[in-house]
Length: 243
Image 1 (tube, rainbow, N blue to C red):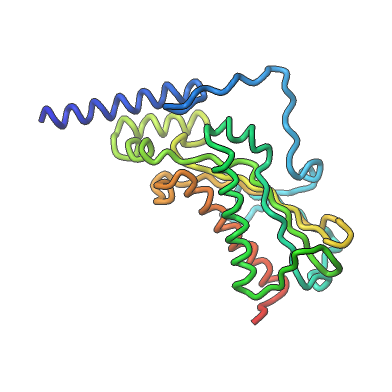
Image 2: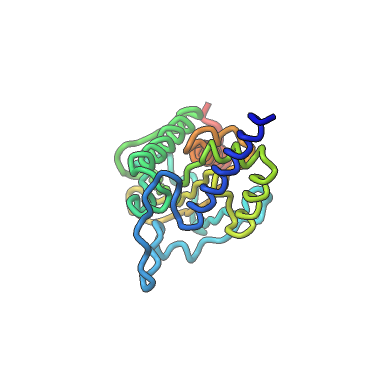
């Protein structure tokens, strides 16, 4: 009985320490980042002014999706795709804000490159490494990638007090601090002219009881897998099966 009491007390102590760290904008075991200047201007988006023409999708399951397609876009004008390497938008600021290394964020971007290429190869859609006529150029940026905290997520999922703290934090901030998330922005352009023909952005929050939380960036990778699958499905819908 004494052992059980000690374990519960230790778990509560860990929860309280974590909450104290989160309230000051830092994670346990990490030094705090410098406070932002009060007169700092919002950072420009990867898609820049083009974000203003994007519209939400009202279909179920796409709550955070914004997209746009040029009225004169014709899939028949393109017979191949060129995939630019995915970038981490404002990587240094993201790394500081999430308390992670830039190398970790670059690995998240690399994962999207990998699954997107595999998605195109799975349907045998031609890929090009140089711009040219009839080539659709795809550029993507990870605009936010936050890691999961596997230990704290487990504690706040099992202990009643931890679950209450987790729910309270999510209600106040809109997110569970121990569950990862990821945001992306994508531009589709005519590779020969540079004209933008479509835009896409999305933000995905991980589920608290999802096993992807056992890896720090498991939720980000899961989101990227879903975006790659969505792009594959849209290509099949617009161009038809290649085999």
